[in-house]
Image 1 (tube, rainbow, N blue to C red):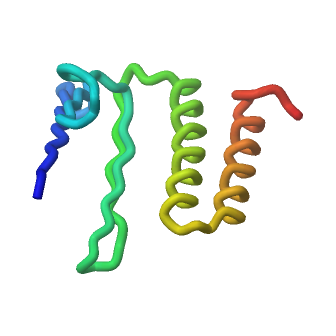
Image 2: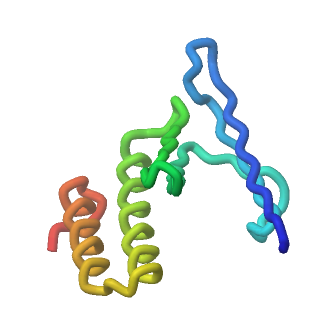
Image 3: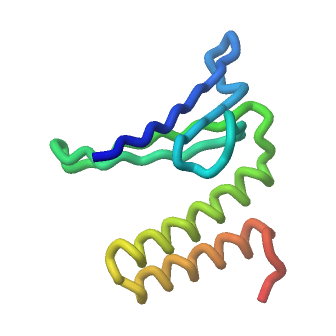
Length: 111
């Protein structure tokens, strides 16, 4: 069995607010350490049958960047849900909501 490590480092200011998020993954295809302004992570706890989440963003992440980040995460979740479950109709509904979100957040022109 092969193991692949993902390393995440979060630098905090004196108030324990994230100022820098860096990550490195052996199998990412990217060289070296990568910097990010935000991360959303979810783990399924099989013992508790519950989701554990970690959401972090740096102090310099702009509101418009956060809106775009959430929109892209919504689309990504729909794609993953579709691949994992084969529930293409519900995944389509999720994409429709992502489109609605993008329109309301003024990320795209109104249709």
